[in-house]
Image (cartoon, rainbow over all chains, first blue to last red; front, side, top):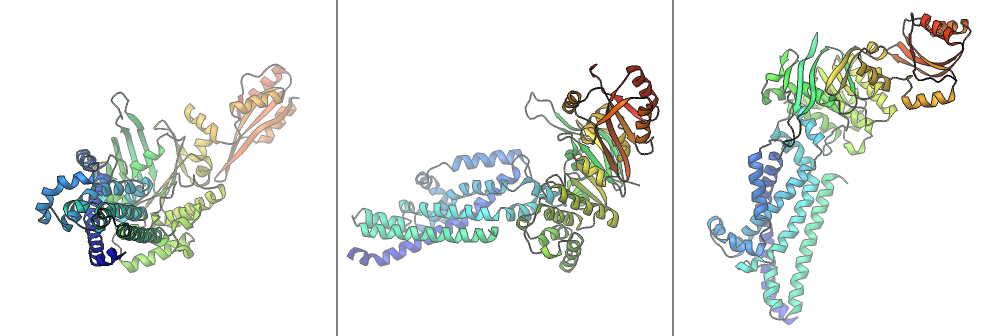
Length: 219
Length: 347
């Protein structure tokens, strides 16, 4: 307990790092993932802008990168992180890699929810003379918005999970804090404090997402 | 004046696998829909009706033949031009296909936004349409809060929003109960009468055709096997295939299994008399049979009414001397269509 009192500043920093990495990764992965999901959705056979070549490439890309375990992805993506964010280590590099890794998973989630919009509803919009992009933004995405929000909520939880591994490249965060000051120094109180903070964070995100989705779906 | 003309129109889908034959959904269809018609297209499911109707607004491109809508050959247009054509043709669906994320009002406003109407004009038009379909109090409701009939009325309002000259109805009442079906059909009748909208109705239900259609085409295996005035097609189908189809949807013709039951229950020869509006009356047939001293009873039948004109089929079990029956039937056959149901036993 005494040890924990000494560590409050570090804990606070770690919590902010987790928050920063999650937000950064969510914005980056969310936007990239949305783009990937939309490409998968519109180019699929029978899609709004069917394109076999693009569909095959997009699927191959997603299927190649998505299964790479994050611990390994960090190593593989390091050179790329240096090019884009200027460094291969630290919090921002960690956040960047988390966002990148998550984009592929988010892409699949976005695709799945878009596909579940009833084809008849899409057809109705076509019958009124709407073009493919119009249908995407004014029908497909709004119609699946509720499930999409739940999908993103699910992903945020996964992102927080991934931030715990950012310690590998000196990214900090609550995960690294728990490892360094709790686990390795035999301080269960310190470790559990970090864990509880993570759980509370996840819980808050889930609550917010559920509430938002419910509001959108009016249920 | 014809508003939609299909000339030798075909639609084939490529085979899924290498060994499959290609699928012919619509096969060499020629038909003409006049302005102001309520044109019914009836057939079993899988007959190609839904594909045919989607050719008219080019949701599906035809693979052969020409289609003109309002004197424009739409088979030669590019996708961007087709969007404008589609904007001028309303469509309603079996599953209503409303936007679940939008209110009733926003559903109806959607095609108007697409067409670039101003906010004030949209507001006014939506209010007008809601009143027309009788849902003025539901403007702010969401589709999931509506009954099936209400949903379809929103569908109709949305399809009519931009004031199209043509409305395509794809099995629009097939998901509704009989009472609601009639409410929706009455609304469609009003759309046709009051707004002069030409309506193309796809259905497998005789009732729908009987209630609103003025012309009808019967489809089977992608082909239109018979078309014409609704009364003519249903009271006296010419083509054997359409006779078979009409037999299953028209009241009064016993099915083979029903025939078996009839034969078990009644003695004598089973003979069907088919009456058409203007033909010799049923009473005369009964009088003739009685005058010949024959014993008969009515075992099956039904009378259909199509826009005030009646036709029907009555099946009688007739008992008596075979020669007398033959002579009497031959006599009646000169005025009324007589069909003796084969296979009667000599009890």
